[in-house]
Image (tube, rainbow, N blue to C red; front, side, top):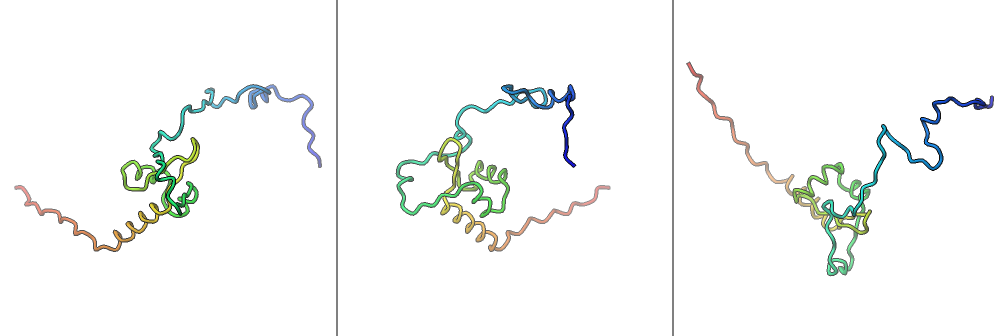
Length: 130
């Protein structure tokens, strides 16, 4: 059976989709694009000497997430605290990480996990008050 649309559409269909040439509105608010480069969000800029290092391998976000089993927000928080290699901007919309730095961070995490645990302080027994 073939679907045949009604000849007179509902008066509410114009509310669901914007007319040709109009912008879409979501929840009564117009979507706005952020202006300015994204590099200001914690990404570092490579210097000329860093760009000329032979054998440097850069990985993008998807490759990093395959290598490191953390969510993007956790990685961002670790970067801000200086506990993870910093990203740097390739273009205004693309960031990358140095593979050697990420591998060194993973090796550091592995050695820290193999070290014996630091003994935790035991709670002090308090005498009961009368």
